[in-house]
Image (cartoon, rainbow, N blue to C red; front, side, top):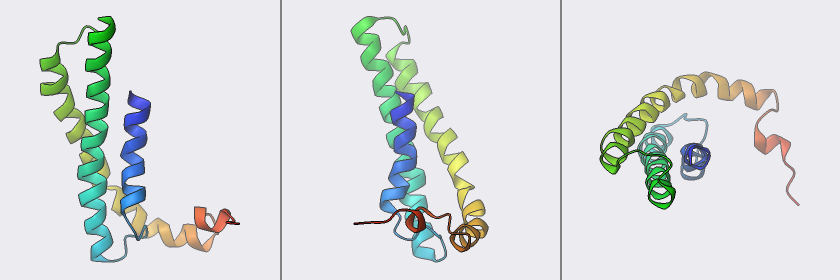
Length: 112
């Protein structure tokens, strides 16, 4: 569950943010709206659903649903959002360096 949930946490901003350099206000707003908020919620809901489903199916996990949905899920949302809030502080100075060095994925992948 954590593998897919954390994949969604990175995939959502990748798909929804058009300008990955975060150089204008629109791209920063898209990042915070879709990347931070939506990505954190999807990650949290998927992991919580996974825990609830397999607890119901097997009973091995042993976490009550009130804990999973009432404590764990909001904790994951807040924790992921706090971590992602500081991402533009790294992206803004590093993006031009990555592009200049030819290390951006669009510089590396050749489309047919």
